[in-house]
Image (cartoon, rainbow, N blue to C red; front, side, top):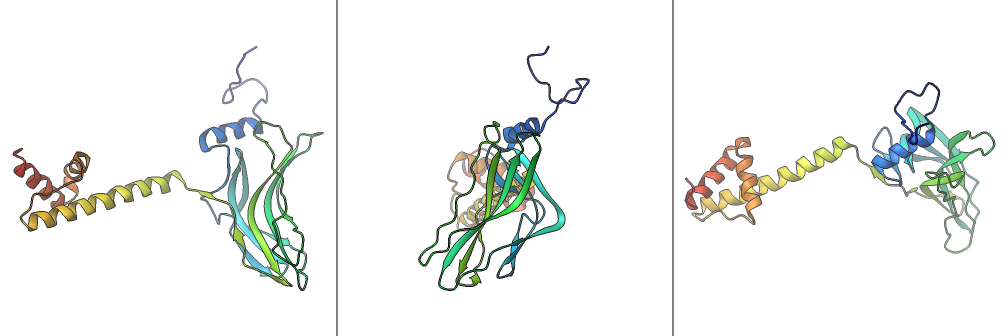
Length: 232
């Protein structure tokens, strides 16, 4: 009998579990709880004083992938507010596992807060360790839903969103491009003023030289810099 579990391998029988996939997801994305940059990202809107609509999205909860299919939504009902009182409810994604059957589920759930005459506090929610199978339930909080008197107030988003690799790549490219353009513009102005083009460090100069083929200005800066420094 093997002393390791080859998850992506044929074993002659069913052997891959949700724990395996959850562990893999957590190893790549981290063990936290966040919304993925896909679909409507669980955007929510107020329908009435006692109803909120949550749109589709994908979430990772300690490695567990939870999804609401594209172009679908869930309407959540709230108890009416009370005149002269305030309260804060929560909208959460709740993971649960039946200890008898091992069946796992995820649902959007409303946790009702306590009405008070002063400043209300958000109610407690379930914090469980599901990645290591220590607990059977866990909540990922999406929104705080305040009530003042009879009226629901604007929703307060609590969750964080993790960008896709494509978004991260574009952010890096945009940051490099912005730095590059600023360096070239500064150096071109220095050349126009009859000054030696200055760069903050050798990496900046290498950046201009490396990307010279992307623009005549960059190439000019590189050539002028080398002339002044006796490299041509």
